[in-house]
Length: 590
Image 1 (cartoon, rainbow, N blue to C red):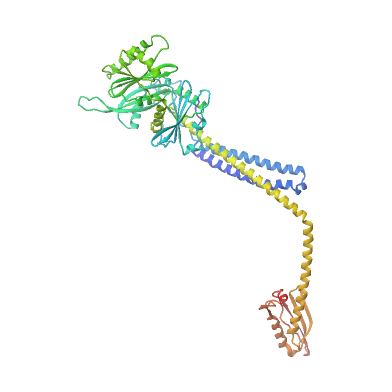
Image 2: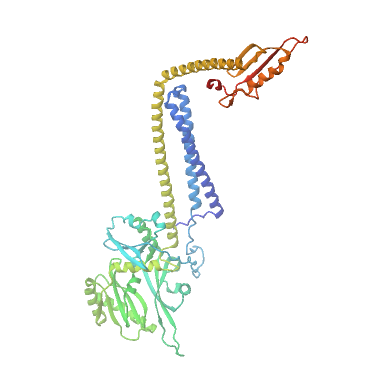
């Protein structure tokens, strides 16, 4: 396997995130501005004003828009790539350190500490996949209460892909977590039973890790492993009469190469597992031994008949091993040899003190063959126990995997990290794709709305153009009418003011000139004797205070007051005054 590339430092990830987000936002704003600017230009090009520019000029304008649009799209892609680069999580460190080829022979280095145990999650769905010899069997369980209940199962031919709707993870997996579990074939599994003092999970893990090199059937740098506690029991009394609480721990080993090949096959089938489990553990938990006995679980290993042999003595599992049958020859003698070696090992270790009873956990098809072989090999009666159904084993695996707090798993850490990273990458890509589709649909709706409004606008413009001549004629007639009405109003206003002046003018004052300018300014002038000056001022005040409908006719703040001028010899003098209408329409209402 190739080593992973060096991860980005945290500060550089933040720079990529911030800069990518700014680039994406700026490019989206630029695209929106270009679309907004392009629409009026496009309407102008299609309208009557489009002929005012030559084709070359229009080509230059549209080429400019196209260049800016391409630049904005490239900037958007660059921003999205930077955001994805900054969001990308660092791959998990491998759990083993490879030895250098030039290093001298030495003791194998201890494996790196595995990650902390996962937090308990409320799984919504659990899929169990078994690659059986005849087909791929898939069970899906739904969370019900504190366990899982079978929802559906399917048998898929090896040539067909697994149903993506069952095993694939999508946005719904964020709030409805889905657990994918695969059963590792028996030929890739090694089982060891170790008896340890009863302790919590952390202490048990540390004790197993200390004995890992002694328990492992191959170098620790080439394996993946996990462990499972199968109950506790009391030790035999010591010399002082004390007993110790012990626990039976089953350590499961598998070749890293075999597991990676198995994961590659799962990936080709479209199944990205969260955990890899050994179904033999569930088979052991499904039986309830009550006396010292040997339990035989027939199975197929690499196309060959074999069996898992478990020795239950002293209230605990003492050893687990596989016994295989040759395809030809004296199969009973070969089975007797293998069982004799296992029994001899038990006698040496001291836990096999009497003749065991034999239990065969097999279905009727396999029970007939294996019962005859065992009876011929051991010469003892064999009790046949019906095995749990495959769906029951799958349910046990689902519950055990969902409740597991083990710090190690048969699935390598780097694969779990890569699957998690691919999951979030898919979410990002799907989110961006959905946003792009929504944006495109919005643009289509916008363009359709603009086209429809443009069509309606052109229709209205056509109606306006058809009514243009009659509209211009109406405007001309209206202007002429307004002129005539204004002249009429001025004429009647002048007559009304003349009548008002005639009524208010004293007989001793002579009016020589009457003027009415701009429809607002009234100008009077004439002659007056020196002894009639006060009468002239009274005449001016009476005009200023004249009202119509309780409203003043003239503005008292504007105009010129009366200004009499007399010659030096004392003869009659001249006067003039001007008044401005406060409400020009007052005279009309009079």
